[in-house]
Image (cartoon, rainbow, N blue to C red; front, side, top):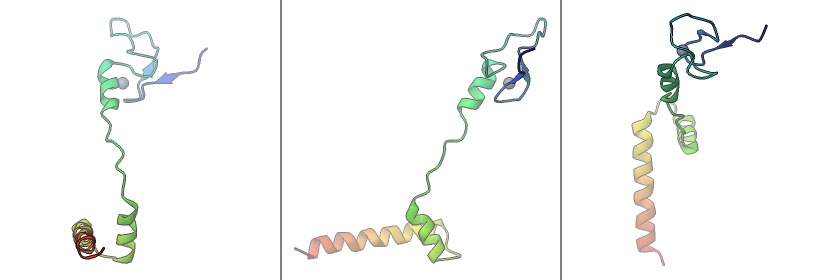
Length: 85
Ligand SMILES: [Zn+2]
């Protein structure tokens, strides 16, 4: 007997003879619905490295504090550019 395979989305057994039920959508998904469901999984969010550093250096700070800090830094940078050289 072959290895049992399960739907990657809902985990139901694939390749079983289920009479009138619709056949497996693919070898990984039991139905088209499950295939689509898995497709729209939450995308990986990339956390900026400096955010991690900022939170480390400022325990208790939240994301808004980080954004504020970014804005301030950017403001300083732009001012430096204008006054320097
Ligand atoms: Zn499924």
